[in-house]
Length: 225
Image (tube, rainbow, N blue to C red):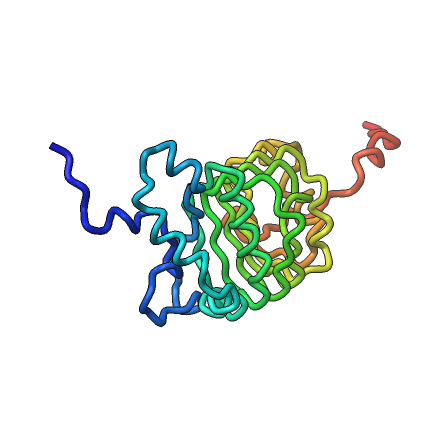
């Protein structure tokens, strides 16, 4: 036999949709922010019993909900593993990211993200977007203050666009398990484009990582024995 738990009617609600609590977004480090299904989808699933609670939330003041979310005052936030399977969930996720104007440390691991170029994180110093679907540095958010960036296990094929971070204070970069890792002179090219970089893929900058003289110069020389 299948019995519904007393909490079943709350399963599609976000944390800020629950009544009678004073928790704000900047007090949470790993909140679940995945948007629930639409009313039409709930009817299709025969889960209409959850709509009563949802309608109560819909009728509440939007401004009060915004104040409760309080994303603008988050300094450190982990939004990994959100399981964003539908477009409306992705849109809600990006809505939250646009409000993170003061976040300094942000984790977005394994969210199937493909393009955050429209997002700006002006104070972000540490960003982890491992295990997503980025194919280019151009698809990353605007992060002018970034110091530590982790992009492991994406699908970045070339280093095109990496020079956009040349003027940033980027000190450490992780590109492990990306196709660009197999590019010829990979480490030398990365360090030549990022003068402030100290660590690449967990390995400090080595003397051999400095760009060698142009190879064409040696073609013009001959050896006399």
